[in-house]
Length: 442
Image 1 (cartoon, rainbow, N blue to C red):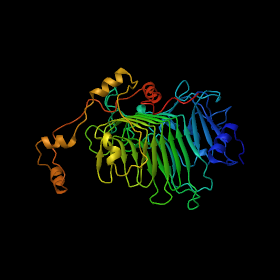
Image 2: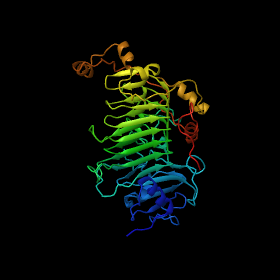
Image 3: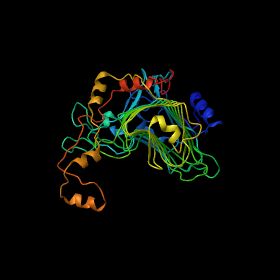
Image 4: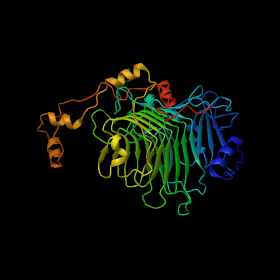
């Protein structure tokens, strides 16, 4: 039996769960500089979260000291299948925290690792979890930087390359996102009890997924809070408020507040898909988004699916290239000035959203390259070229797709160029229009 449980973990679980935590849950400690073995105690911490992931039990709390972590065998992903909490940003004594400052806990990887797996950098996959305990989940104070995991075309790291390079031993750029929490039914489904999840004080950067860089997939009766995070310089979707539950009763609730989402790129310069969204809201989930700064989205600042009302309050929205707001149900692209009048699925209490001029503290070098990128209109390119009589075009014509000249190359000299952790922290710490994320208290 395992009864050791620190006061800090007890207070955390007691406050969030509203009761006494599982008596068997324990605290684990991780330090890349002091770690050795798998005991995982404060006196003898483990060296990496990946080294103890298989030993975790429901309700455990993992405390991680500052440092750079690449997981077991430099594989660059950690997958956990039980509900746990992970708290980063500690000093070596595990006495103080400064998660965006002197003691940043950085989860990353190595693109040339022989143990590469196409998985999220950190995943809590509870889709098949069936144990009786449903403790609260907290992910707090991590910096997840996938820049070192990405493959770039040159050493200047100005443009990602999606495919592997067998000649150099480089792996493909990961495209599953940085942080994903997937919730399933849980053991108390049908008893009107659901998961309680809090994701806060995290920074995600240089992630290149097709979908969410930070994704929480709720379930029935879930209560999820995503607060004071920053998702910066990523493809796909910045924050994806998703659900794996399909039904109109007991829908999960997700609150997205005080986050900064900036520089959300399309998957690549040429692709014409629904990537490039700051915040994406799934069907069959109730979402409140308030006090967020959502900036520079290649498609939409907010993308809304389904017919549930989205409460959108006091957000700063800027730089949605296609539109500020999009409703998939009805294919409605709506600019900021018309959003509250024309949007079909905004909650009637939505309001207080704003846009306008602001300053963002990004380094001159990174900003210069961002200004050099080229956003390519695929439809315009294909309309202006002479179609080639190829087998591919014959197939495309059957499905009514535009004909394509295969000898025409359209590209951008810059695509998702690597951002430094310092730049990401600066963006994360600077409120825009009085909203967005800010450095957590030490």
